[in-house]
Image: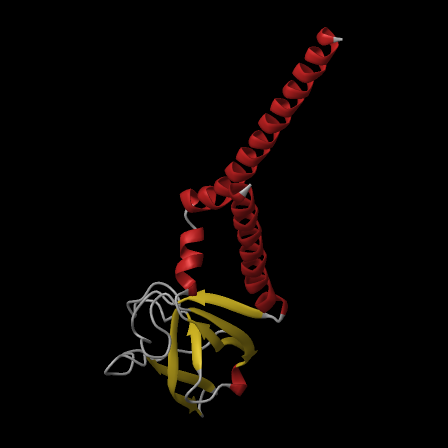
Length: 186
């Protein structure tokens, strides 16, 4: 009886956690936010490695120095993936009408060695970050972890179903034995 209650409570908690985590991932997307995992230490102190940041897509004209953006550095600059850094300079070339940007990681001693342009009229800008939550998303990218997350609750459900069937068949067998004993004594 106690094991059944513990199992039921554990299953309910796992289901609730799954629903909350799903809402946590879907909710920001419904608000139009994009999510990124911080994979380096360049923003440590603001967004540590493993943080999950949510970006809203804003017009590039609304960007200002101090905003934290997620962008693709120019080819040949070094980093090959997306970078989330703080804007430290926005400059306009009056001759060409081009806007140039410069960023810096909050934990870095110097500005990034490149300047860049933003190709579109919109740009993701960080609006919120959740420490360590990116590790969960990174783990979910692993097939074995996903199988465990799906398999463990399925295994618990199967075990509880089998235990229930076993108890029910034992109860039916006991009732049949009592009925047979009563019939033979009559």
